[in-house]
Image (cartoon, rainbow, N blue to C red; front, side, top):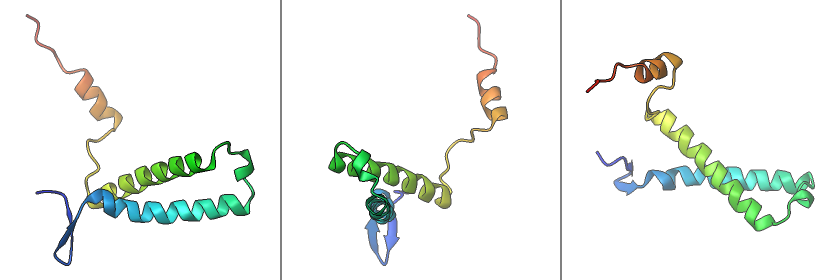
Length: 91
């Protein structure tokens, strides 16, 4: 299983699928920041926009992987404790 997304017979990488909502969210946030005149607090606007895109890409990739059922290992405290307190073999 490759993890690619099948769209009418065309296989797309998951990062590309996550990039589409990230681009939309970044554009929306840029418009809101510009309208609220918050860019005056930003030193380097293109660098800030790139960082915003990277953050939105991370959020959308995490959301899509969670929706697809690839949430990864459980981070519940009981799981963490049972894995850290397992008996170790003493030589």
